[in-house]
Length: 108
Image 1 (cartoon, one colour):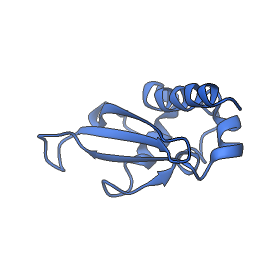
Image 2: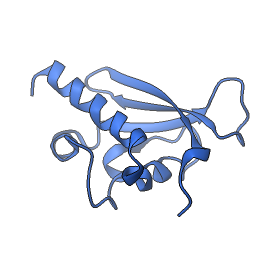
Image 3: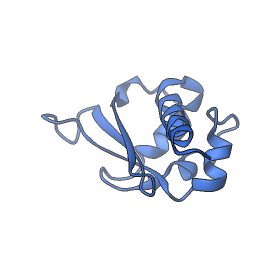
């Protein structure tokens, strides 16, 4: 896979996970561990019936290298719902961050 193509697909998977309500079970798994704990994105998606676009391809070749963690948003406390979500592929020196409000997760 061409590097730029891989990076676009990583960004697409990360954005889809935080954008689509149908993928919220994976987002809940991101927040199920303490802040600052790294998890594989593939591991967070194990219970999903429908995966984000490009996820199968990314997970097949990069499952353990594509990881995610969350941190409190700067200036907020650990109990606040405002978070920074950080996705990283360490071999590619690629990362992306996003703001996420945990209060937006629908009730299970």
